[in-house]
Amino acid sequence: GQWIAYDTRDQSGEFNGDKIGRTRVSDGVCQTVYTSKNGAGCGVVTCNPVDGRLVFIHGPEDPDADWSYGFSRRYGALVDPAKPNVAAHLDAHNYAPPFQPGALRGGSHVHVFSPDGQWVSYTYDDEVLARQAKANPAIKPNRTVAVSVPFSGGVKVNRNHPRNHDGDYFSTLVTRIVPDPKPGSDEIMRACEEGWVGASGFVKKDGSRQKRALAFQGTVVAADGKPHVEVFIVELPDDMTKPGDQPLEGTLADYPAPPKGVMQKRLTFTENRAHRGVQGVRHWLRASPDGSQIAFLMRGDNGVSQLWTISPEGENLRQVTSLPNDIESAFSWSPDGRWIAFVCDGSVFKVEASTGKAIRLTKPAAEKQDGPLPGAVVFSPDGSQIAYNKTVKTAGADGFTQIFLVEAGKNIH
Image 1 (cartoon, rainbow, N blue to C red):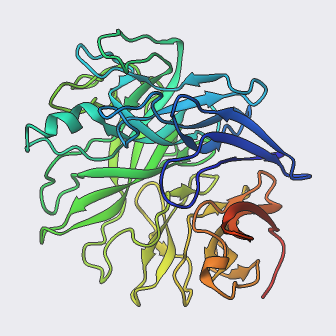
Image 2 (image 1 turned 135 degrees about the vertical axis):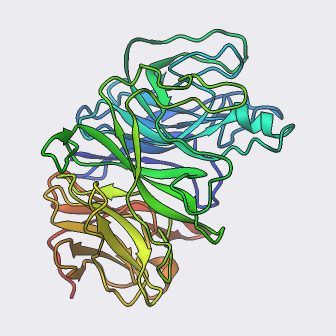
């Protein structure tokens, strides 16, 4: 709770930051922890909740016409703030056969440590399949979800491709996607915006505890042939290095396969609603600390984007908020599981998860562009403060994104 990590990308949407920093909550002192070099960009930083290490997206150094920054050409970098500018590769990459189990063949994105600080989840785009698709229309690569786990000695790969590199962690895909899902089935064509379920997993119906699981957004095809997004969960085994029914490392024509014991399950079935599936501003699924509820955004019957929850067993679908305006941001739970923070109507709000009571914490902005930005709205580890971003206008410039804090117990009205 002493530091907030950030990157230095601008608001253009380009991946053009070259620094990872952190600011001290007590006095606003800023430190640059890492500076990328040789034309590489870096950004989208998150923090290990246990030991304070930072993980972030790193683009390719010495980019050229054949290998510039892209969804399938980036990796996770790890930095200990006590050792600035010393970065390690999270995920090993192996872009040409023979492929290596534990290594990926594409780009990883929005890396998030598990609550115990041991594993890392992220979305993934496959470079090998992206290139194969240019010659084979039957191959339709799309985004999916992967996990990296600690691995003694790291993963070593051959050097049969100039962009191959080793990684400190063993990395595998955990979701299964298909090019053309059967209409009305639970098959998905895309998996993304995942979140860890519970600080220590969740308790199942039979009383057993699932130690690790990820909730994610999966794109299905309804019986009428139209795609929409539903909430899914994937339960993870303790050992992520054992192959299942297909190669962990993948092939030239198919993705790396999930390990043995990975279980993928659909939680929501919203095909018959007026507003199908997960909708609203881009957001990541987030579970309550006890793992009993997974929160997401979906439009109510009146078309307004509201906060909803469902259990990790697919039960108790519930609309939490009934706000007159769309929720405008990603969101986070308070450490005690009582509150969820987000942006709505130009203000930071918190809502009581059990009752839906919404409390405005910041005064509404006169103009929408002057209000809180729709990115991270994050509770501090002790639950006392909420961090968010806002643009501060500067003479002669459009303004710069800055970090703000609001007391979580504050009540505007």
